[in-house]
Length: 259
Image (cartoon, rainbow, N blue to C red; front, side, top):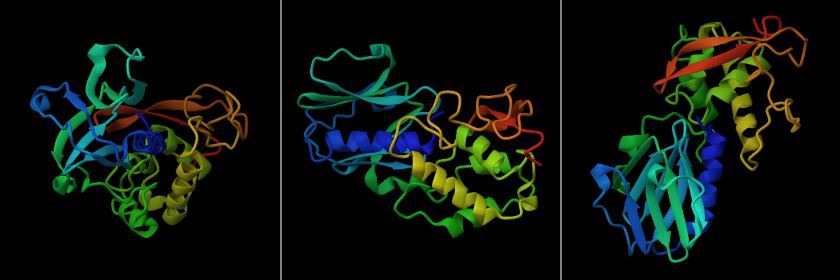
């Protein structure tokens, strides 16, 4: 599932290509919105809110969530799509530019005035202009019995952390993923680290939480179960820890560096 930095970059890319342009055609390939036609409307902006995308078009918002397999791609007029047509859920056309949303986990068209109905539950957005670290720390600490890994993934606490960052944050702070939030000594420092990690990666498609962009060195623990810890050399352990947003969450940790 894409992390907040991926969705942020997608929004920027979509905004740069579409903002200020009049749509010449739209095609929403989900039954509930199949008859919606936004042609003639102007794309005002495209923004991210945590892991949600909001295409604001006239007085309407195309709200999408990429979930596990989703993506928005841009094509020139007549250019062959890079994914099968049957995976397309939305097609926005502005003259010679096509923006296609493939395999979107959520797709709906709502009045912009009703956006709070679909994203109002989210916590402070790590990459948003209104980022509030104090509020994020307060929300994260509000359920002291919750496992810190699960609490980090709860978008009601802070919006934008996915599986990659939850694993990496626990490692860098030396926390076992199962440690209760109430036993985390410095929740504000954990929140600050989450913010720094996402900000550091928001401008590049190759994500690194270690500061090293070489293959195999980009993450401390995520995707490395069974391999040696990059810090102490101990074999990394792994497993699953609950379901978040309908998906089992894979977790990896170092039994020496994390307590």
